[in-house]
Image 1 (cartoon, rainbow, N blue to C red):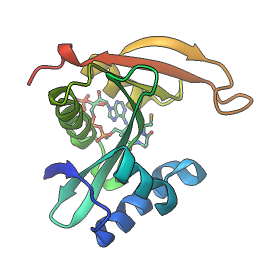
Image 2 (cartoon, rainbow, N blue to C red):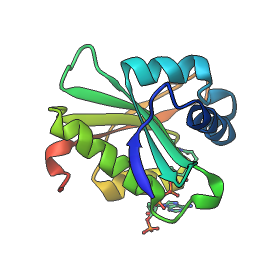
Image 3 (cartoon, rainbow, N blue to C red):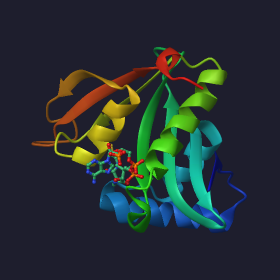
Image 4 (tube, rainbow, N blue to C red):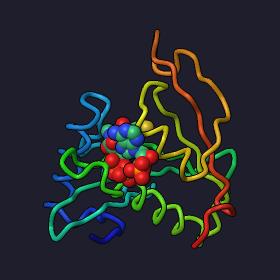
Length: 153
Ligand SMILES: CC(C)(COP(=O)(O)OP(=O)(O)OC[C@H]1O[C@@H](n2cnc3c(N)ncnc32)[C@H](O)[C@@H]1OP(=O)(O)O)[C@@H](O)C(=O)NCCC(=O)NCCS
């Protein structure tokens, strides 16, 4: 398995990344209209097993803290979960950002998303805020942040 950035030219991979997003997040998942601008103006990384996209994550750079990036989404194909794919994708993509001068990464996660919360906490993300009704009534989120200096090569 390899981790690398996704480009717009890779149409087959782009479609797979969208399908993975939709399967993982339903209406909250990326479609091509969102993923393409994220590729061009943000950062999108995929885990590839041969030609199969088994994981995808997206980052945007923060306008207010320019040394900070926000992890917009992270998901792993269902059959590939609990095999370390998510951890490797997150870790390696964070190391790329760190090498480019980004100092910290934040994200939000549903309080009941046990697998994601465990993954983030094991990687060293610290809980920084509780965002009540972040995405509408009852859609609360924890906010987490990681200082990239704590992430070892
Ligand atoms: C969250 C997600 C990305 C994790 O990806 P993954 O490849 O399964 O995670 P990994 O195998 O790298 O697991 C890393 C660690 O996370 C934790 N973890 C992962 N899945 C878990 C589960 N089902 N239950 C409890 N802990 C879990 C464990 O601590 C695991 O380490 P361990 O296996 O050594 O105990 C994946 O479950 C997913 O795509 N979920 C749907 C989309 C989603 O919720 N994304 C996050 C939105 S904020």
